[in-house]
Structures are given as structure tokens and as C-alpha cells.
Length: 237
Image 1 (tube, rainbow, N blue to C red):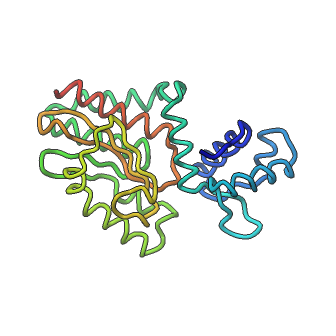
Image 2: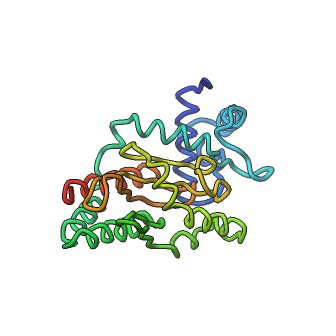
């Protein structure tokens, strides 16, 4: 296990969260203001984080962006944090309301997916019986990461194979997060798949979740996806 100091951890988290917001490499001058230290100190810590494989510099003289390893460290820390389990107020209420007033099971699941699309700006998906319901494709391909046609093809391949993979793999954790190269299909797509398992009228292994770029607000998306799965199971099982 790579040793990482508390300050390096905080800098990495700031890079992850800032990059999610602005979609451009995060520089030392910005972080210096946040942490109230010199830019030279931040640059020194960035060099070490880069050596450990948590961030990289896409261009000479540019800021840094997280690697898949950096995102995985961040996500694992969120999973262990009580703070990440705190609610998201208005967003959570909107999700719960749309699910509860869906009527029949299929409509409730679709409402949950459509609301996740609106709240996370990712593509939303869910298994309904023997088919995969997808919503928000334009959200996904509207992200700056997907201007490359080869990457779009990788995303399409991932989506084409997602339903059979879910049936075969049957992920058993309440919340599953597959980051970038961790994706079993479409490894080069630069996407993160976040799915929650729930039991419902169609199957004990139903799934709801989102697919978005690796650059996203994991804390909120993970929370809302998990809440969607919990609410559907409470109402439908």
C-alpha cells in the first residue's frame, strides 16, 4: 500500500473535486490559495502524488488531473466516510417523490432513472425484466471527454454489452463503482459505471445506476444511486 500523507490526501481530493467542476487540469496556484501554502509546496506534493500514480500532467506546464488509481483512492475513502452518507436535501427529495408517485413498478423504475439523469447529468440506466432501460444518452455524449469518435465507439460497445454482463456477473454489493479501466467492457471509454442492486418484482438481481465520465461528482452520484436502489426495493419488494 502506498503511503500518502494527510496533506497529500487532501490535495488529491481537491484535485478530484475541482477537476469534476471545471473539466480542466488543476494548477498549483489555485490549490495554494485553498490550502494557504506556497505554490512551490503544492508543486512538491503534486510531484509525489504523480510518482505514486494518483495524478498526472496531461501537458507540460499544465495542471494535474486524477488517474483511475487516484479516483479509486477517493471513492474508497468516500465509502468509509460517514460524511458521504449525509443526504443531499432537495435532490434526494426530488428523487424520492418521483419514485413514490410512479404508479406501476415499471414507471417507478423509469422515473428513478430519469430523475438520476436530471440530478447527475450522467446517462441513467436500469434493468426492467429482460431489458435495459437507458435515458440521457445526450448528457453523456455532451461531455467534453467524448469528442473523440473512437472513445464514443468504446462507450457504445460498453452499453451494447452491459445487459448481458450484468446477468452474467451479477454484482452483489449494494453499491458498485467501476472506474475507467476497471470497467469489464469498454475499458478505454473513460467512463465510470455506478450501479446499485435492488430486489423487485422482476428479479432479485435488478440494477439501477448511472454511466458518466471518470470526471464526475462521485460523492453525490454514489449517494443518489444507492438511495434510488434502496427506495425501489422498499417500495417494490
